[in-house]
Image (tube, rainbow, N blue to C red; front, top):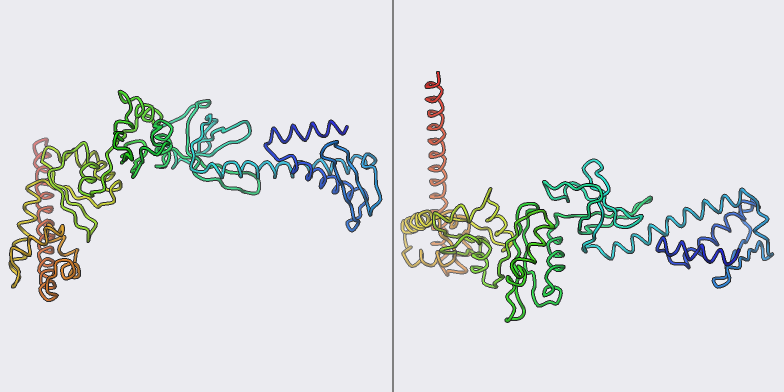
Length: 409
């Protein structure tokens, strides 16, 4: 009996990943509950001790030893129910402690089923993870039994269960995949400095090498693209752009917009805006499908990026110069200073305001106020012109549609 008890405790501890001492303590508490049930005395001093080495059980009521084998069926049933509840609570605590430490790491599991859009993934024999629809890669479906990798996004403990929230859309999932495929990242030779992702479509990763002899982009791509290929396959074909990190914001923005080639970049630190000039044939490539390339580049670099053609850029400069020169006391030198500050249009000058002009460019406050006021007025004129052009386009489109209908009639 006593050796059998030790074997049972050892088996439960192994299967449920629970500390043996916790199980012994639960057994003692369950037996105390059974004894109270048998005698119906809540105030009595009842103590149960189980020898951890021999399995010997000793029970005492008011310092008098009692034989627990004589308690009967109902107290035994009480002990059983208490024991089941406590072991379940210990199991939940064990699962929570294990997975809360693994938060932010990747885990492999087997797809079980979908429940109202949520994907249930078996992580081990008795542990399931939940992947909400928002954390699933759009367009991907998984079959029961399929092995997938996920990120442990969060671990929540409730009264009845531990809820392990999984994700395949979080940017950190990409980080972990790179760590698993590129040993140099784990060894701190290569560092992921920034990452921007639109799950299921495209990801941009900026990498830097701490060793001059190691090419960070080449190491991440691998021989004949072997490393990046494994990551892309895991993500179901999501495009990944690996760009070289640079401490120079101008170089970083240019790298972030690849594969488009940049002709010129003007940075306005006051507005956090980068105005990028690209040739006409590079414009669609720089913007990307539905603006995806420029949007990801902006998130990767931390700059608000405006993309212009050379004609648009020059028109903005000319309009700015004309506006500035209408202000008494302003000249070509002030225009050059504004451009050096990253102000390349009347809209920028209107947004920047007076303070940077006086602090950074050392322009007299009165002149600065008049410059901003002139820019504000010109910006209003520009908005009116743009609105008028748009209305003209809409009227032309309506007329074209009307003519087409008349031809068909």
